Length: 302
Image (cartoon, rainbow, N blue to C red; front, top):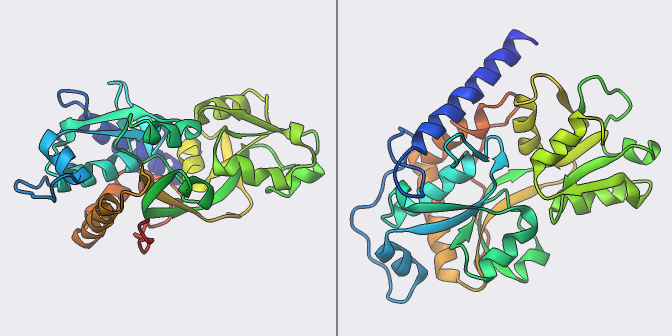
């Protein structure tokens, strides 16, 4: 392992530790003792009947996120998640006057993201949630707050798979992704046969399958893979280039345009104040190979 790689892994460990300290507050939220904690509005007022008024009045919010993605949403030893998605949720909550310990984080794997929003089990979902037309038919999206790109990860010593195209010429190779995810659908066009695709409910199971040789590759967004690589002790590597664009959005109840616009404004203010950049560099941006994050232009709320 190179000195540069050791340094990057140390930086990630420090970021995760910092976020774990943040998560040690009372209640079911993430705590407020860390320097990462965003400012919390002390005096806010919203239109009666709006989602913002309801949440602000209750001083609490339920957020769906991932628990198995280093840098975005990784469950710590205290049982609470930490990462960039978690920090984005805390920024939005702060604009509502909600303290970090007023946030309840609910584990939300890819395949159930629309369902938990529709059933009202969460107020919003921030879970590396790619905005696309199929999902827009069921939920609305604020953002995007980040744009990733799909890539392929293999074992460090693997020279046979050099990118997604290699999966078609290596018909016996199996690739793993997550059920209900955009990458799982996209990779199908690169396969020689459907049997090559293996899916699990969470990314950690894919990483375990790759480590034990049950599959020969794993595919999802590059920033998620970089986080897994940083935790692999040199076992994994990325191959090929990014072959998609994945705009991550904040999923909310269908048609709640006022809440969508509020979230977009909150994200823009965080970018202008430096809170967005600080959240990135302290989490997913601390991984070796991660690009500098810049808040993308907001989409139309509908």
